[in-house]
Length: 323
Length: 295
Picture (tube, each protein chain N blue to C red):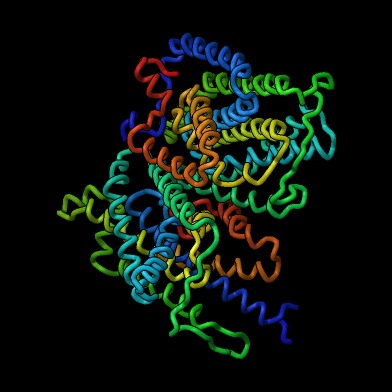
């Protein structure tokens, strides 16, 4: 199999790429700071949560070559734990989010240890099956309140000072969380650890022969991805003041795959763009019932058959600079 | 009332029967997945949707053309299998040079499209499909009541599974197939049309799913989402059994159905999750699966 046929379009020439990625990052931040004054902030917050979720997912597939088909379990788990902590135990928002994120990280360790025992297609099937198991667990366990979910979660006072029921305060809090997650991922993929991950993606036996304990690298990448997905899930639960079964269902796992694929697997900014497009589409087509699913399916088919680089991947290819 | 381990025998055997029925469908579907995976190296995520298409096809044949169950059982695999052949020729065949994950993503997208279209037309409620008159009623076995149709489903699935195993493991055609799984380029060099074999194999795997769909229609009703959750369980079955062996997927399918049935009797809370728990345990002890070889 030739290198360019691989599932991802990798970045190369690390130092040369950093300059224009910084420019792109500055443009993104500027847009996100202006956006809430022109666009409905709750929609933006939803898109930002999914953007972070997709970035976390992309860390695993784009840089580790591991396709997880069960990432909804981390989004949903963190949502439930954060919502429960905030509502029942009265945690401050920052601690509720940390608690939810920690729960996802723990789940990531357990499921990661199981899933990395197989590669490729099996890895996808195992993560999907584990996520389904977690889904059934939440259907039955009482603290999630079944079909109703945990409703009316208080957003609370950030650090005991800032009232998050103010929509603008909440927006910039969400934006800050997103940027922290995004920069962390950016740092990871440009670190020596990220380089080893890419080496494992390209040729695992060779990475092993060079003396890398690939299982540990893969596990760490998995846990990191689960943790950041959990951060997105916790934040989402506070934004909507709701944690429900939708976020744990396999359709959610499929959606994050779609966002990343559409934006560009293995690109830095692709998942963000993909998330904004898919969330906008769902917003506009919300009244059209099942057509959303049909269109999502069609995007999958078109992306796989004709558009494997994704939007940002194509732009980067056209500019000859990986984004 | 007689009891075994404190459980009424009626309930125990009733659940075992349901377990065997579920196991029949697990076996048929995981067999199809294994056959397709063997040659195409693709996990067919559309499998659940194709099982649902089988049920709907049987229903349409009855409602639109007045074609009854028995003919539907013969025609549906051909019709749905033909759609599989078209999918393979138009789409999947373009992906063989790429990472196998793209096949998974493509078939997932196709499953979303098919299920979305079906839900647009029929919502989420089931449409009843009557069982054939010949198989109405049942037998009283003394310790339990055995409906004829359910007995037929178990026997028919077993026969189809064993026949598939026989063709693949014991005939000349099957030896070509196994050879092509090992080394397609070499088999092609011997003058065997491997691309056509791949197309027909995919069609056959899809036909198995459609066959299971028609058989399931009288039991579970015809429902746009009937395959959506089932396929995830079947994935777990496939991980447990390993896809290396045809007989392995058949045995694992039936065995897990039975275990699920027993769980419903002894610890009903875990009946939804027991197969996934078994998968986790198997992954810890024997990652390649019970009948698989790591590759």
